[in-house]
Amino acid sequence: MKRIALTAALLSILSFGGAISLSAGFVATLLIASQSSVAESGQDIRVNVELINGSSKPMPLTVLNEKGHAELLYNIKVTRQDKRRVEQIDFAGADPIPVIVGRQSMKLQPGGSYSDYFMLNRVFDVTKPGVYFVQVQEEPMAGRVAARSSRIEIVVR
Image (tube, rainbow, N blue to C red; front, side, top):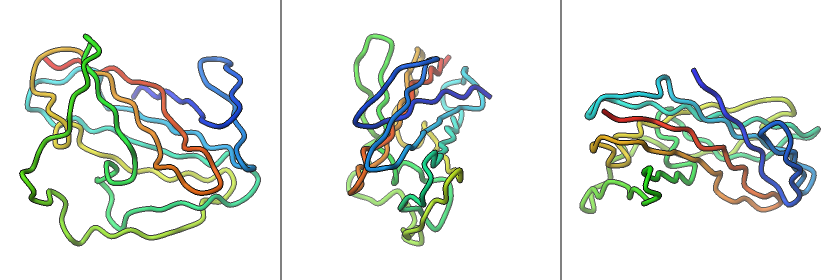
């Protein structure tokens, strides 16, 4: 499994392919990974998302009551190799997520992490063969800058 990290904040010092950041006393790292960098068209593509609290105090966080719908927690950007943005699938007004998925607030303890995932092919139209780049960013919260992951590359055949 390939893992790439980038930390977001007001002040960033790039080092070793990542960033060191401080924002209102919080340091957050967002990691994303896919189980494979190559997928067949129509195959499920699971993208794991992990948020790590690198600060010395508990960090406020909104989470879901059910795993597997991280697209509801994060802003996801998908682009093709030609830099064209891939839009989310239009469900024609229908809610594709079961009503039972609720949100709750929690405190992510120092050094703690929260993991979830989403199925890329169920949220974005990645049916055409080609190279896709995926990047995830937290929803902005009061008191801190949203963490952003590095991009991962997924090849659809």
